Amino acid sequence: GMPYFIEETEKIRLSLFASWKFSPAALPQPPSQPSPAELTPKPGKNYSQWLAANCAPQRQEGFYRAIIQLPLGQLSAFQAEGIAAWMESEGLEEIRLGWDQNLLLPWVPFDRLHLLYSALGSLDISGSFPGSPLDPVSCPGISSCSQARLSTRSLASAIALRIKQRPDLQEAA
Image 1 (cartoon, rainbow, N blue to C red):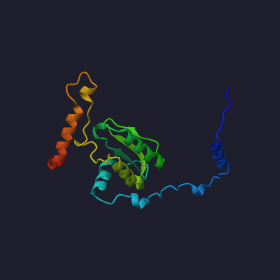
Image 2 (tube, rainbow, N blue to C red):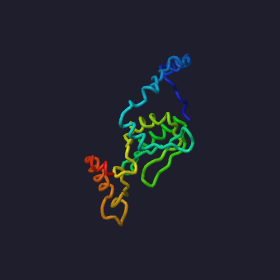
Image 3 (cartoon, rainbow, N blue to C red):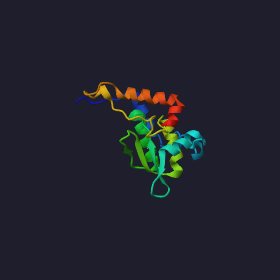
Image 4 (cartoon, rainbow, N blue to C red):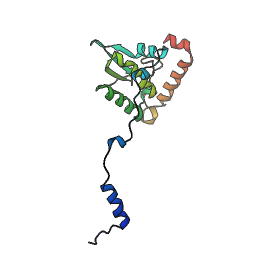
């Protein structure tokens, strides 16, 4: 084959790299991580309501199970990756999908529930109404089922929205 010729300027550039020394101090430093106090949600009605509605103690002392309410059973890839990242950061390995189209996360230490709530809030899935009329179960309907006559997700969404608009119906549920 034909020999490869390097121009003189490339030879000069290569000679500069040969004298370059690695220095970890020269690398950009990662941003500082927020303290746990900064990640703790402000005590308030929403967190208290979520804790009461979505979390329950396990038989094993100090551990809780948390329900992650998925609106109409839908979970985006971004949300799934966010949940997985939080679980990995906490050393949790188990998650369950319920018949009610929500997720159940067991083995969460009580003192980490506030961090889970914050993570779910940033993923827009920190709903506090699992198992209620505000958390309807639905199937895709006409988009995937030849027997369906309507889109049940649209109907379920409309019903949940109407109940949210009427506090008297929320109390009755």
